[in-house]
Length: 315
Image 1 (spheres, helix red, strand yellow):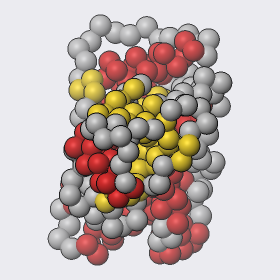
Image 2 (tube, helix red, strand yellow):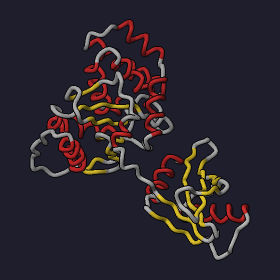
Image 3 (cartoon, rainbow, N blue to C red):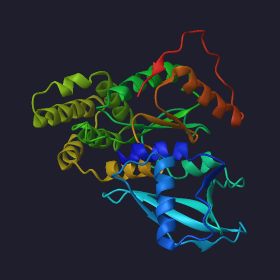
Image 4 (cartoon, rainbow, N blue to C red):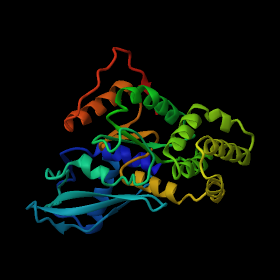
């Protein structure tokens, strides 16, 4: 809930200049100023009552004469928060929010630096200049649709020039067996990338096979059984695989989720193509457009697309 709210907040605050009139009083007392700022922020950004707002004391701004800097912290009872910076006029009659961009850095490159893909199973081109990273949930029906769009349709067109990687982002509060599936997949991936991808293909195409089991333990057992079958198919170390599956170490999965949170992932699937985010219900043409743009930016040839209707990728 709070992650979804922050996404909305960021979208609404994406203004180069936001000017808010705070009245015509020459000077406001500190408590009065804090109250005015809180009410303006809560109103402009439609912040729900359960979200807390904390306003810092004004401090002189070195960059903007005539204004003081104020930090507004928005958070909830779970400890999740976001800080927004505002400028308040010296006479306390107006407030504005500026978004400052550092043109010396590429925002997409900076984002990709925050995604750790070390040791993750890859599919497609080896060490390509174009990297497609998908934050995935094995139990998510929309992830299943995205997976089937990427593999095989997108993969047929881009598999020889793009590297595909999956990161874990199981929404355990609504998908109770998603974490278990992610752990099992990683147990396979630790020994063989093809085993990981075959498992991902099968689970995304057959989610009901797991979900139709009557109890949580039965669903976990079904996942473990499918994992061991993939291990046998790819001649993996069965003892090592069984030990990994039994341990159910969620550390790597939780770390992946934390990385997703840090870069604005709030739902699944969320796909990053060289840092460009594809989030929400988009037609496959938009996925192609992002891939083509990344290829061109890196001086790589773009595939010729068949003249077919674009199917939507929902979330």
